[in-house]
Image 1 (cartoon, helix red, strand yellow):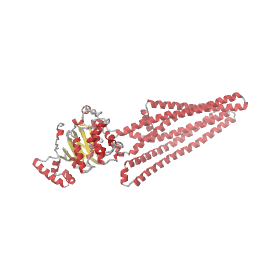
Image 2: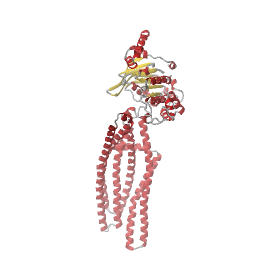
Image 3: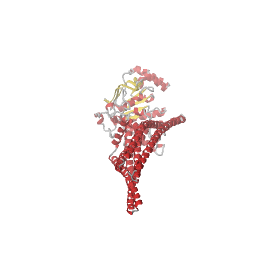
Image 4: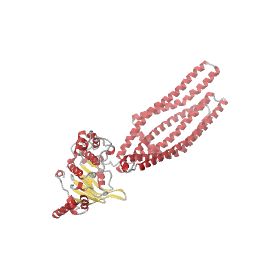
Length: 637
């Protein structure tokens, strides 16, 4: 984006987030600033009259001139004091408006981040995203201050020019215009360097904060690997880079300051020469000479402020760039249509009402292709029919594409080709929120908020009562964890839940899923962190929890898949085998080899049993899914 485009877009963003109160405060602040500039422009006139009156009073010894001098002195003092009072009042109004704008822009930025696709977050650094908001807030302050200063500078310069014209000294006007041209040249020359230096500072700051945040998020791994020295060196390198970039920016500022100082000296010197010559020729009084000198100083100040405004604006543009780039990123697909089958569902939106298990869905994958990178396909023609109310297990080696199936169902990612449907409706045409409301997902790696157990469970459904939370915890067998602490479910779990074991975190994830009252349960490696007896107990609990719902188990632990109605074996992104546990053992294929590797000697005896049974009854063909309907599912078939 070009610099001017960035500035325009950021100003439009600020304008869109400014409510009526913020606009009123900014307008009041601007009016006060204009009044203060007008007073600042007129104050030297009172000083001129005061000096001339004092000179005349000294020459004539007239008391009337002394009284007039007192009034003029009071007027000059009042103008100066009112200028300061108005300046402080302006800061009060503008400060409140700036804080409100920052809060509203922050909410919009955060809300947009939550709506961005998962691919965006996995490809971004958290520290850079958080620092992007801090930089944007700084940019907002710089932009608003720059706009305010530009307005006041214009008012003050117009007032000063009008007064100089009244004095009848064209040579002084020429000096002023020459000074303005010199300042403009210096600022225009330095603007390009300021922009490049500011952008370098912004990028280095994002990298430093990304390193800082990433290190703290992985503090346990750092300690386990004894990698503190390496991480410290990485952070120090990023900090050193940022320090160097700031030094470059300050050097650029100093060079501009030296150039401005040279223009300042030339301008003031010229005004003194011209004014002194006018006094010597009698064309200007002593008071006039004083006011000319004061005005020249007063004109130079706004010109320098204008240069500072240009400099700050260049910095603000680069600071606002990261936030605008994030806001330009399209949110994840929300264009689903309100399908009647979902709109009629009483749990839509409020998620209150009859249990969703009364209507378990039928899920269909048809010739689904997926690749995270062009040269690394994940699913290649994956097809699967999950009957309503059935329990299906998807098994396979690591990297076979099992977890991608869950992500596709939740539309965390989208297919490259093929179709996924929910009761015959394509999932990419369903409202995203309505779709996810109906899925109870338990991930392999449960991430918890630094809050209580109850608060983490409540994330499963907004507005859930404490009674519902307690019931979900009870069904997820969290009573032992709650009873082990005096605070019970109000026990804090620590950052990312690191105060709990992996199994305890998974129990909380299960409680979250229960609280959602879903139509479809999806468990991704739910027993991967558990020992044998604990895994068996958990699986027994899950059978009761999932009764009457469509359920998909994604696992490499075949003990978790054994009792499923249908077991699907993934290999290289395709279905290589499917059927019941005994039928797959009888096939003596990939599933059978995996079972032998995991179950040991018992697997041989079970496989022999399965082979005899298959010989007697006829083995199920891999192309013909075998589904055993449990009693709890017949009513949904």
